[in-house]
Length: 173
Image (cartoon, rainbow, N blue to C red):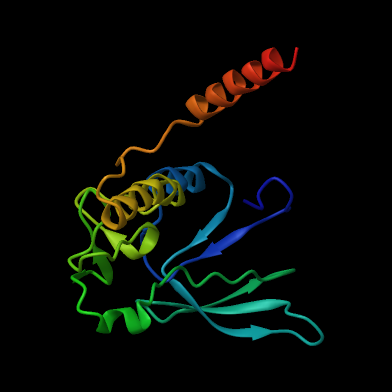
């Protein structure tokens, strides 16, 4: 947030409520950031730089001029499936449906991150980090059915390397 470094910060949102993560909304409510809802910017005013933003109330159409030093624009996040929507994948709410192995309804196609959905899905970057190794393991088993589904833990791999290193040192004497 800009609150710690700006004399004043305002957020303009076209809806009465924010649809962001609950914790983020709570942090905003506890801050000194001015919340202007439901407003939409209709004009940027100024001579050599933006000095004011003309806002219109979404319901009453009342106009409000907001003096500013700078304007940061964030339109939010809208995903687009592009040509993927033509692949006959099962789509729900603009997301590709997957199972617990991150498999789609088409054999050999996997999806992770913001593009996929399943029951209880939380769309966070951290979720994608957890989904990716599941999809990779599933794809590996699809390619090689004798492969193990569960990848090795990094601590196990490091332990094996240390053990091999000890054997090399012992053999060198």
